[in-house]
Length: 332
Image (cartoon, rainbow, N blue to C red; front, top):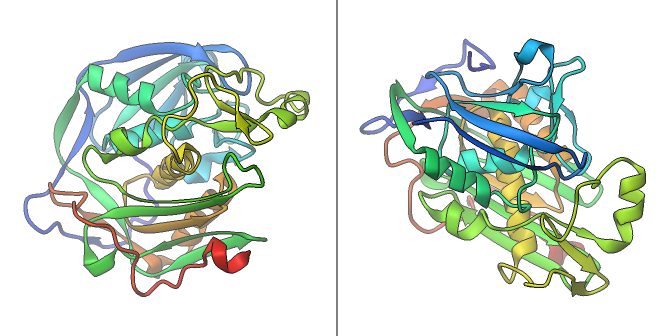
């Protein structure tokens, strides 16, 4: 069953015709190399009943039925990726790219069967998962879709890193993300991207942005048991101020777009789509998890909300006027 946080929380009704929950029409499979473990992993996306939520099922251990809900409270590790655990010895790592694809395609209910401890990296982006979803087809279910509406600003920080959630502007049924990054390499430097989660925007603007790393860090990462499956086929690799991948970048600002992708995937671990605005300044998986924890620790900061069938609202994106956001220029 879909994990709920507080059964006493009231729900806001949808304005207009309610949106319906969605799953896949049929199961679909893929396999590939895991970014950190280097293992070859098989993954199958299965349709699921209404109110199931997203659930990972490790079919290689626990009698083939070890299940982990895709929920922020199940996060056990945030080093370079987001790892979910059942609280014992069963875990699934690097879930954020798949979760971003599910968020971007508005999939509510799914069982992710995986034969291994890490989601395959594919090409380092969410695009292959969007392709799988499109090939399987999307089925609406006769149960209203619910979101989590942010009611007041919540923020967390660590050093120069910051992440916040705020109510959507003008009480819109919308979710937007404003992400800022800053790296010493001239290949990246400072980048900013403001993204509105709309019908096809994720596929065109965000899904193809690949994970990235620095060549000089590879030996240390592999000594720590990380990035063992990383290559130019599933990551953008930077050496000094140069991108080593033969084809270059897919977007001029691919690096910050990938951080938007990561943030969207992490935040879908709220258990439902969010209505509000996210701002991340040098943020990452750890801060994203801490932000969800802070949101749900305050009963006055959120509520369940039924959403209408035009969610997410289309139109120009605006930063909520009640939020004074820090900016990289102010911290230089």
